[in-house]
View 1 (cartoon, helix red, strand yellow):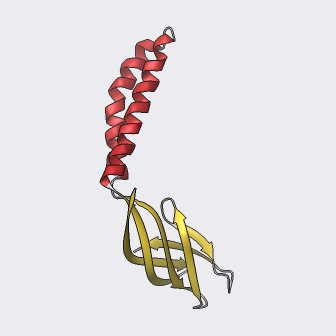
View 2 (cartoon, rainbow, N blue to C red):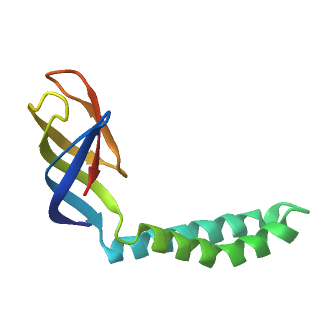
View 3 (tube, rainbow, N blue to C red):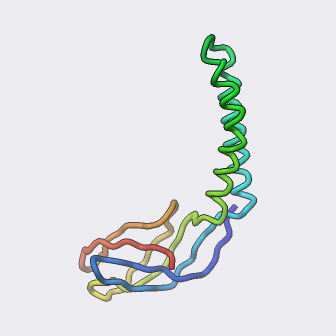
Length: 126
């Protein structure tokens, strides 16, 4: 689940920059907590699966069980409030023609090129 907020985007191409309106999707604290819990569970499960490996289990099981909560908390803290995706419109920094950034998932910057002048650009939330 994500929350959607209205904001501004910044498009940069070379040394020129423009701005425009954007719809930004961000992860909710609940989603960040679920990511942290999943990471914790997978780390602990991987540590427990190594019980059957002779010699390795002396380090991997205690190390994995100690690392699991630390890694889970770090994933939660890093993903809390992060941008999940963005869409918007802006004028091309080079030719000034209108461009539309369709919904892009993942972390910014987002890359594209102007359909009119073919110059590449990078887009960030402002």
